[in-house]
Length: 268
Image (cartoon, rainbow, N blue to C red; front, side, top):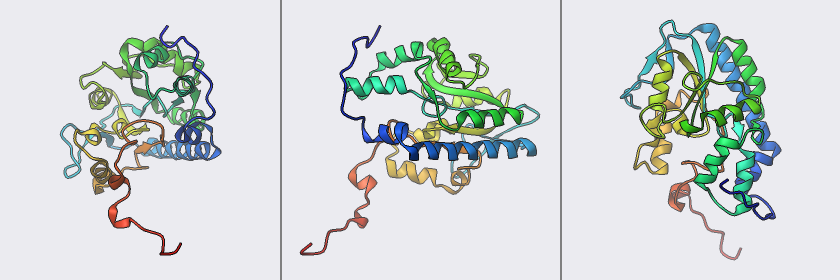
């Protein structure tokens, strides 16, 4: 299979991997976040909201609109990778191989990684609370639809649960839009009132955050628009991922605004 050659050992993984997968601090942040997710879902399930947290087609920061719930059953929609599970087997292989990302190897991981991914700290307890509140757990991931069996096996082996493709498991290719998830979120919303969206990338919340041409400062400003800023921790949840994705971007000027530049005092 792809990547069958065993990579060589390395001295240490990159800093982002050390923090996310290996640190006590990373574990604590995840447990804190999952407790917040579970508590929010429990409160919303008891209140039975009229509106979901899925943006309606054409909605914007200036004109936010959310899909109505009606009498549909409640659901919480999760990304999978670095949201429900840590892909430890694949991540370690890439580090040992000295590769940023190898797509054929990743596809092999989607098919065969069951038992080598770990549940994110706090996730299993939170999922038990969410299910006990009568809320369906649905996974919406950019893993490939052709690898549905392997993805379901990986989730089940990690203790996340059993999922049915096209019902409680949605994958890239299941709706128009490619890697965009709005089409799948809308399809899920045909049958469920989605009261919570959880992921590690803004695209797990709404495709508007991944619009082409958005520089990191513009994307950051969009996330802070009043209509959207009110949603963080109140239906929209983002877990930290310093390892990969569109958040790992930005020039020096993007990250460090020139007006904040500083120099040591003379003679220091």
